[in-house]
Amino acid sequence: MKRTEKKMKQKSFIVILGIIMIFTWSCSGRNNAGNTSESGEKSEGSSKVVENFLKEPLYIIVPYAAGGGADIANRVIAGYLADELGTEVVVENVLGAGGIVAATQYLTEKPNTNRVLFTNSSLLSYIPLSQKTKFTRDDYEPFFSLQVIQFALYAAPSSSGIDSMESLKKYAGENRIVFGGPGHGTPLHSIQSNIYTQMGADNDTVTYDNGNQGIVNLISGDTTVMSTAISLADQFVQEGSIVPLAILSANDYDGIYGKITSIKNYGYELYNDMLTMYAIRKGTDPEIINLLYGAFDRVMNNETFKAEMAKAQSAEYRNMNGREISIFLDEMDKINKVLVEGNK
Image 1 (cartoon, one colour):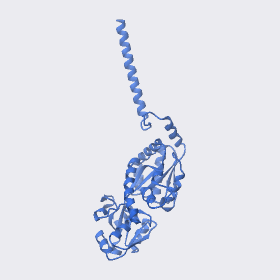
Image 2: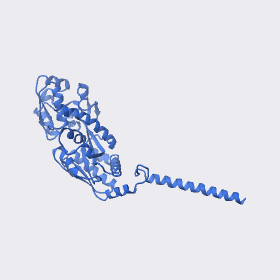
Image 3: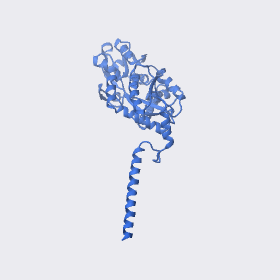
């Protein structure tokens, strides 16, 4: 009888011990979620890297002027990001050559830097392929995208008589086309020149400093046609001053800015979807990248933030992680290599 009681006590102890071990393992697994090494074990070294990273303010390098759309968006984001990270977040404007200066200066940063670069697919794909830059796409580690900016061709019927791709083609068969764009060495310039050349028209460009200036040139008749972001042009489209001819994307657009037919439907496979994104120096610890991705993602899903951004500007957001951004850039590299070869 005593032996039976002893065995029962041993079994009870083993069962209780097993329950305690399972409970402890379960709690440990939850606490370490998102902060593990490849083996699944918590990395003390990586945790220290994150701890050290958060001791300093985070700087967002914006290669555009203060007061512009990109600057405003990043300053709103910075406030919410500071709450998520528990550290100060500072927006720093570094201007010059459409972002090339900022991208070049950023090469002095080391992995695990507390400075992230706000950049775009044009700077990481088209520019290094078409110009002799000190940087390439491989110098950066994109970790979070903000939005895809789409561009379209526009005309002002009151000054040119052009109101569709068909009328543009007819015009091109009889006249020289002067188009508005951000200048040589940019995707918008290359795409437009390529399209009008395929139409059989001699063409030249009038460079604008910004899209608004380009639209003014179009309305006044200084240019025949132009390309700019559909978000920027929408106000003028609503007023009836200009009309969209085609969107420079592989698919038709049907969104908050109306419906615009893809340039592909007219026989031109030339696209310029520009993905804006945040990148850090290549070689940065994955724990820091995961930390930043998570913080940005939570900001973008914060309802209060969404309401504030909606008041600040009209935009369509597309958030991707590093792997998804890489796939997007791979596709843009293919398109841009064709453009660059066509310009030689």
